[in-house]
Length: 320
Ligand code: ASP
Image (cartoon, rainbow, N blue to C red; front, side, top):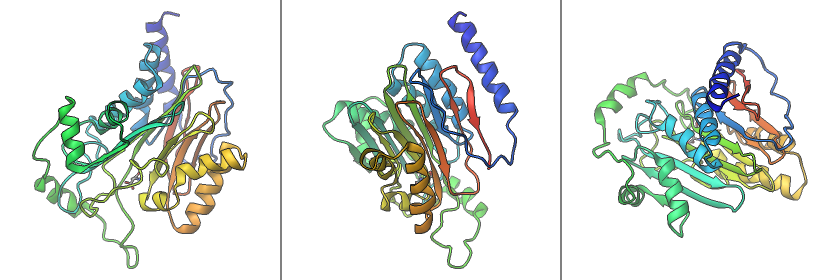
């Protein structure tokens, strides 16, 4: 099959598979062992599906796992999404402040930006931090300056009081005692296992809508919202970030695999369903390991997510 025909076929089959999704399926998918034939692509939420497809195209065109993660996440960042990118949720001062990170499984290289304003593609800024600086994390105005210096597209004047005024009345009032629970938030998290057996991970979000200005979530914090290590797994998280930070969720799962010799499935289940849940943290994780095992574990009522396997077919897109 020519690569173009194959791509059309893949698009057709992924769309067809998605069309047959049945609401109410409550069984998480069994971990699929894919014999390291890669690529394998997993992402969070409905907006992950086009990101998966774009990432697959990048890999088929010869791009690396990092290229595919970056391009897939960029797609969501500029898609007009309401919880990712500059169209995302403003903070309590009406300003959109973005978090993103990227990590490379083979060498533990990582880059992230946090609380950055006006940068159209924070995931690309994160990758530049990883590849062009001796640092891992840049925040706020420094991250903006760095992105601009490196030629990334920036938009000034993001202090958008109008969008905040439009957003605010739509927010539900927190129930008594529930005032610290974020009502609006989501993260594009994207994991890739490439044909060479290398894992790459990335994520991007505007974080918790209405957050205190300067608040940083789990997403840009290596080991909290994202982690990638070829020897253990790639893990990326979505949910109430404060709990993922306090419990170092992504690294905890990796550490259980490394030191307790647990499977990815067991480690993810124990951390999400026991550690995180008992602490009161809501959310979920996606994970994959170098053997092609995939997990999508969550303790919330719903977390749509999907993956594309080595055959290019959408394996899972389940609503709970
Ligand atoms: N974890 C993100 C944060 O707390 C939001 C989300 O993924 O829903 O910023």
